[in-house]
Image 1 (cartoon, rainbow, N blue to C red):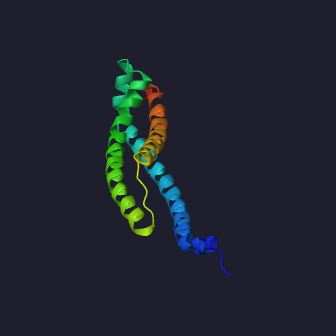
Image 2: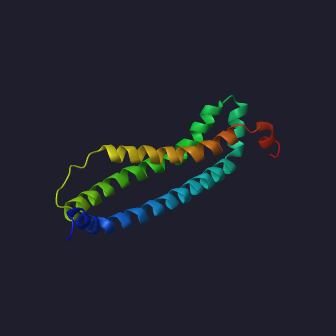
Image 3: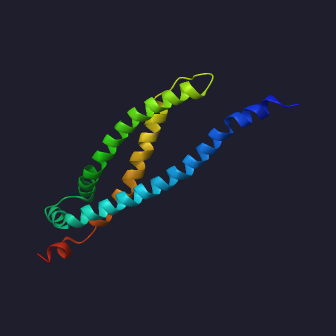
Length: 145
């Protein structure tokens, strides 16, 4: 004698395991991406220390310097989010239609939430590095020239 919930459990067990594997893989990818963005922000601020020092001497505020550094790095992130939205929409639609008996509507909310999370995770390491660069003494950066 079998119960129907056991049948459903075994039917969707492989998807549950795949979901768990994807959760761990995505967590690792997010960590690597944040480290890469932090390194890119550190490299960008190191390359632009003279420019940041001159801007500070000429009266630029900390917010303006952070905005300057974040704009260069976050533009590719926004472009990547738009490309990822299109690709994931078609993949999710195909997956939902082929693997499940009943289809459901795919709304825009998960894509916007994922984009906001991606932008937040991109802004954090970049703004930390930009904040450190904006608070350095411009005399120290310009003294070596």
